[in-house]
Amino acid sequence: MEFLYNVLTVLHFIGWAIVLGGYLASLRSPGLYRGVFHGAATALVAGVLMVGVAEMGGVWGDDGPDMAKIGVKLVVALVVAVLAFVAKRQGSKADNGTGAVAPALKHSLGVLVVINIIVAVFW
Image (tube, rainbow, N blue to C red; front, side, top):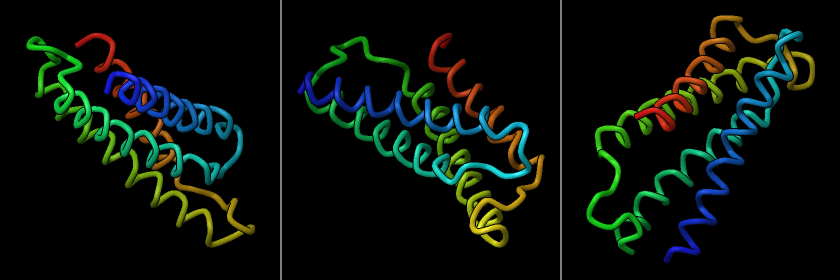
């Protein structure tokens, strides 16, 4: 179970790296890379599976992380995934899938990813 947990942790990190990297790479353009949604979905699913595997397999032991922290991270990840989906749909309406996205939508996505990282590290 610990090996599966570690594989899911790597997938979770890769998903968030795709989201943050896609956001940072698209700062100078009006659009947002379509891979950001896929990264957000990967991070969300891998995070949920990580918690399930850790709870089933006893990876965390008795002193696991606070479930309030897990809940906050889940809500933020869901919001990021929805925003990334909306941005993907908004950008697909023009320019062969790389159309402009509302700046507030794009920047709120980036801020929420950073907030999720801060919650993971400091809580």
